[in-house]
Length: 85
Image (cartoon, rainbow, N blue to C red; front, side, top):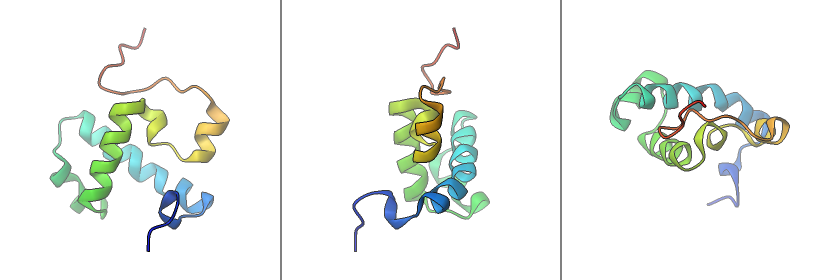
């Protein structure tokens, strides 16, 4: 069964997964391949690929939970193209 949004996670569960998403993104930024990350974080390759795509498209805001995106509004990203200026 496919859920409309969030994979069926509650807001609290989504926030709990946020540190994993950020760790995965940090590893991706460090040059690790998608297939190398799941064993260390005990997640699926599919999740890493989904988070990589969100990170590339929207920067760090793309991998934050909905709750944090709403509270932070505009987040400076750590996406590959962000210069930090």
